[in-house]
Amino acid sequence: MSDDTKKAVPYTVPIGPTHPALKEPVMFTFQMEGERILKADFAPGQAHRAIEWMGMRRNPVQIVHLTDRICGICGVSHTLSFARAVEQVMEIEVPERADYIRAIIAEFERIQSHILWAGVAAHELGYDTLLHLSWRVREFAMDVLELLTGNRVNYGIIQVGGVRRDITPDQHETIHNCLDYYSDLKAKLLQVFLEDKTIQMRCRDCGVLTHEEALKLCTVGPTARASGVKMDVRVDYPYAAYGDLEISPVLPDAYLGETRGDVYDRIVVRLLEVDQSVDLIRQCLDLIPAGDITWEAKIPKILSAFKKAHGEAIGRHEAPRGEVFHYVRMDGKEHPTTWKVKASSYSNLMSWIPMLEGEQIADIPIVVASIDPCLSCTDRVAIVRDGRRGIMTKEELTRLSVEKTRRLMR
Amino acid sequence: MSEARLTPEEIVEVFTREFGDGIREARITERREGSKKIANYNIWIDIDRDLFRPALEKLMEIHFPHLAVVSGSDLGDGLELLYHFTIYYGTRHGEYTVTFTVLLPKDDLRMPTITDLIPGALFTEREKQEMLGIEIVDIPDSRRLFLPEEFPEGVYPWRKDETGVPDHMVKDLWAVGRPANRPARPVVKKEEQGEVQAEGTTEAAVKGKKPSEEEEQRHE
Image 1 (tube, chains in turn cyan, orange):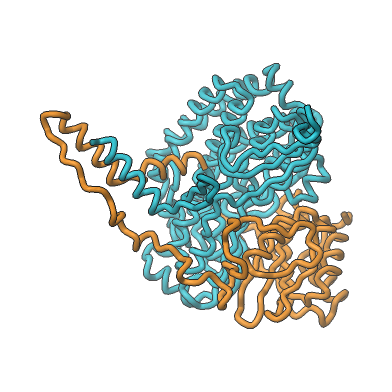
Image 2: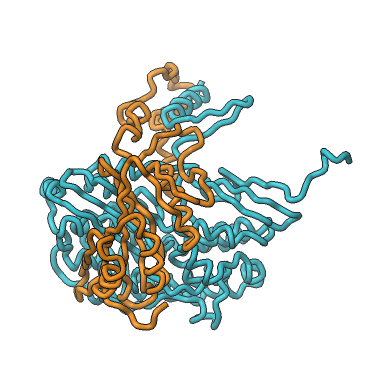
């Protein structure tokens, strides 16, 4: 082999922007030496939708429905954070009953999100039986969310000033059945995930994020807690009904006796948080006060209140993936002057670098998935054909799909 | 980390004592929700640009801060950057948010990096460069973050002046309607194909993108 055809070490392996091992678009570039990752780099934003830009040109009642769509899995988290920020700018009180309903929906969301993630993790390990079993048991939480909000995703339950639907007494039985179902399932879930030989071998001491790195990289949520950072917005920063509830952060050492900050610890934290959410919903159902569910039901009245609102505020919420943070500034106009959305994965993506470096190429999917990344799906496609690059917009894609269907029908 | 936890008032006092006139405004907001109405506290400190780094170092002496995000507003004459930190996380009901607000005049949009103190700040600093057109001095990685490669230089989406997104870049999907240059609708003979099936496919063709949207949401 001549010198110029010889591959120089390190060589570059690109993974992405879309790739079978990734669930969502992100572009990874790895410098490899054999099977080992020397350096990792990534480029997010393959699918930036400019939701903040859109929001700054809309009124908060419209934005509430945009926030539902920031993330399909944590649909209520962004809405809750945004609504809380706007409510503080407007200086309005949310009825206590609405605070409880918000917490109940948020915890059901956590149950389905964590079990969804557990299934994805199993899939990334090549354990598809467990993927299907996990997603089957997740359905009960989805059904209850549909019962309570009317939708499986994009719940549309939160409005500025409260919630749009009440939880009626006849729904309690179904909710309790669902909670009992997950309580009974806890031991089984822990057993199949944590006592499995393969999962232990693949996940123990793999993708390690130390306590110090987690702090310095501003990591949040289960990813931070799995590295031993005691941090949970629900516990530390009382809001909605969480100030009334008995809750403490889930840390891996309470279950395993030690914290290693590896993929295995992240599984432990998320599975235990499913059980924590069950407990929190039970507490909410016991404590939920009677009363109104919204500060003002008439949309025109809410809209006119926006025009009087001046000031800035922060809305935070512990989403399934960690802290969601919304900053809103309103200057007496219908639309906010500034709206900044900080999703949980925004804080967690940088922790990929220390997790991935030094690992094997085969572990990339599970390490990448272990922070439960939530990027964004796309409405545009980049194409490279005959050496030329171009972007296809939603309109062009629609036109092409119509043409193709027509062609097939001939 | 210090041993004793300071109250929000004491924290404001630490900064006003240390930086005096360099702090234009300092205030505390609180919010009480739920039945027990337990308060959470937000501290807002409006500070000179030159004093921001020393102030952050002071905050780090109190407790290693978690940087949530840096947000920014275009206020016309200048840009306001808001560094949102939280401290005392890990204490039940004890966490405060601390927001440092820094005003940058539009003819001098430079801000020192804080990545040497908090490496995780890189992500949000990169975003501020591309979205607001701020120059983060000494940033270790000045590549774009979210904006696509072909996005034009000198256009900053969060700006409300002439450097903001121009009208011709905005696509109003609601105004686009259905594609105008679509091929002719084929005539399906009822005898050849079952009526139900033929209607079903036409329906899918007209709605086109609906199934993929549902798919998107499920995958998010």
